[in-house]
Length: 552
Image 1: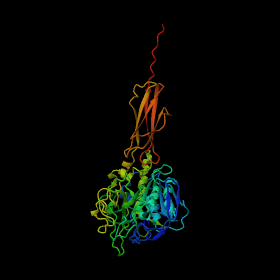
Image 2 (image 1 turned 45 degrees about the vertical axis):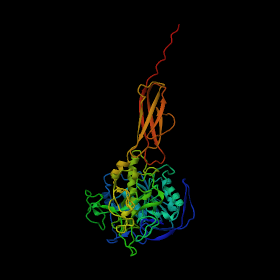
Image 3 (image 1 turned 135 degrees about the horizontal axis):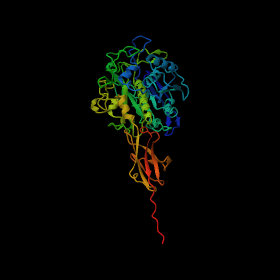
Image 4 (image 1 turned 90 degrees about the vertical axis):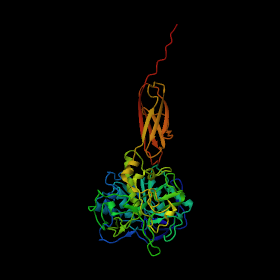
């Protein structure tokens, strides 16, 4: 079943997608897939509707800036494109975003486009989902370009994934929706996984972020008192995606002593005491009572039924597991959203909030990487940045479960496969929430190339110069090739790196000063390394005159 952030309804989707390894896509008929909201059925994510109408309710951007220490950097996502995929039409989204920005002192995005790549949607989104996604991605990265991709609820929602990367050249794709993977056959799931293959048509790395849903622990055998789910969330569990779970934050994380019912500023907060810790950030999990009307909910997570654990996922499970990361999602506190010309008179949350906020964080990381010649972040077969970063790059969530104890359907007796948070990776919050400065230190380090030669000293014309180029990057083993040149002219073809180095023997015929250059080029679509070069200056001595022979 296709699940979206907060829709309380249940509908049917008649669609299938045949996806090959190439950019071409085609749709085919299939059995109907059941579609519902990412929140449990009949359990909308708008809570605590009290307060004055016409005012924002819940936390606002400056609160999140304080909690996640986003004020200490000039990075704002400039030069980065965030694509947000939603279904149905939201006709007031442009004016809604302007009103949101004006209320909280945010600049308008440098570019905000709404596109209908597969035809104008025939229905209107009445769920406030689109406004939540756009406003909170922009709030976290106000300098980023935003492209809203709107489709009908059919195969277009799947095709939009590939479209966002290839046609829009997006750096980050945000998807606040998901579908239980048991709604697909193994073959169908593998085909859909190809939508997020690491190498897009233009060789551009992309971070695909997808909500882990709001249905608590997910697997094929979950039983009462928890409502059944149709497997772990896709696309969150796709090997090319990053699944986003949800947390709860106590007022102290925002530098506050209590929860504000409604406000327009952060004058009551103390930035000096604000910040997430293991004490004030916990798993988002709801207490539940089934069948008495309070279904179990909270951040989604669990092992895939079909996909094996990728090489980059450093867990003890044999299958791909989600979430990978988490951020604020608890609807009991919620955030302010301006939708259809007015403030939503209630509180909105769920992993539909955490996902676009992480999109904004990634945009900031990409901006810094671009400034030092690195490509955008992404996922390859052997590398994924949430797992390449050290543990201190995240706030490790160690308290809580989803659903909340005692309704936890995967108790501690099952070992690591349980919903309770613990030190390190877990199935509730993954590796944790962002610590921006530590992420920047870990993921925005330049690629370096050092060119050396053991035979440069004393080289004479006509002799061979032995060159070695060593490429290094703190995030992993380099992949790419090196081209050598002499005085600006190419010297042979590309030399593929072996481990971290490439070599060439170069014969220099002319005496005098020379410059040898080695330029590293990363493999197309590689999300780790950037181009780099190094040079070596040397002076070649004239070849000795041959000995003369005397005449008789």
